[in-house]
Amino acid sequence: MIVVMREGCNKDQVNHVVQLVREMNLTDHIIVGTERTVVAVIGDDRFKDRTVLESCPGVDRVVPILAPYKIASKQAHPEPSEIALGGTLGATVGGKRICVIAGPCSIEDRPRFLEVAHAVQEHGATALRGGAFKPRTDPYQFQGLGEKGLEILAEAREQTGLAVVTEVMSISQVPLVTRYADVLQIGTRNMHNFNLLSAIGKADKPVLLKRGWAATLNEFLLAAEYIIQGGNPNVILCERGIRTHEDYVRNTLALGIVPAVKRESHLPIVVDPAHGTGRAYMVPAMCRAAVAAGADGVMVEVHQDPEHALTDGAQSLTPDAFANMMQETRTIAAAVGREL
Ligand code: PEP
Ligand code: MN
Image 1 (cartoon, protein in one colour):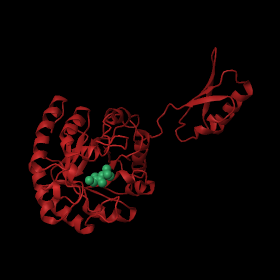
Image 2 (cartoon, rainbow, N blue to C red):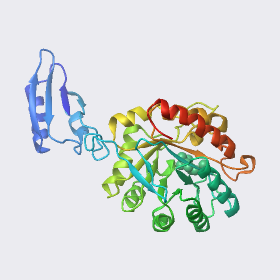
Image 3 (tube, helix red, strand yellow):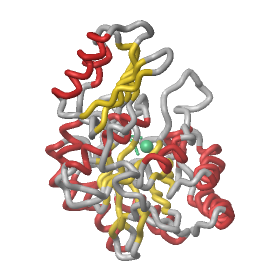
Image 4 (spheres, rainbow, N blue to C red):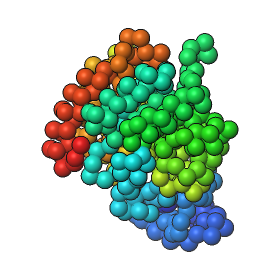
């Protein structure tokens, strides 16, 4: 970091900063300019509290140089990470091939889920999604089938070979969900649940980490850092839209995060335009845009009868609409040197 002193600060104030820097086991280098003095701090200051320096007399501001996340950063791992998802079809995310995670919002019952599973597999999905534990705003609405849903999910994997992705909402669910799922989803509401992130860091399955709907890029990557630091390097980031003032959409899909993540991190990023817009008619266009922007995959909701879906029908594609989306997105993938 660089400590920029105020104009007209005195020697004692500079010396005080130097002393604090040394107490932090870091090295200082004072540069006296014509208008300002700055103290360049040398060493890994990522884990030091820079607000201490910021509040010292004579200090104008402190400019961090290193990002606070370390193992999630590109410096730590310059090559993009490619993560194997599981299933029997060799699915991965982060390589040349665009990953498509598709399926209903929730697992509602066995016949309907298996039908959708086969439909998305036939149209080229990479992985199958479906919630068994649902984070619902309203406690009176469908909460998911729980373990019964996980059994159905595992059966769908057996039948289709697709890797299966499902949400884990609490630490106590981690062992159960890990037994059935190939990829553990952390939902937007739990991105800041640091104990859960650490617990999932001990799991031996890849994690799909959704961005908190009010989280900054920095907070998002620090949440990934919690998981990796816990011992699990296989983190897939997922942009799912943020809360803004807009009301023609459920959330605002912040696609600018895709190139930003690519610049900052080696982790793959997928985009979820279903939750990111809340409107089925927007989903195909946003899938194309996500791939054009450099995303490694998309996650979409698919239901054979969206009007009667128990959750998120308005943002669910029918199997036919899914097939069209795949076709259109394939053209974009080819145009940007990817495959689908
Ligand atoms: C979901 O994927 O069904 C879900 C609940 O997503 P989010 O956590 O992004 O709202
Ligand atoms: Mn949903």
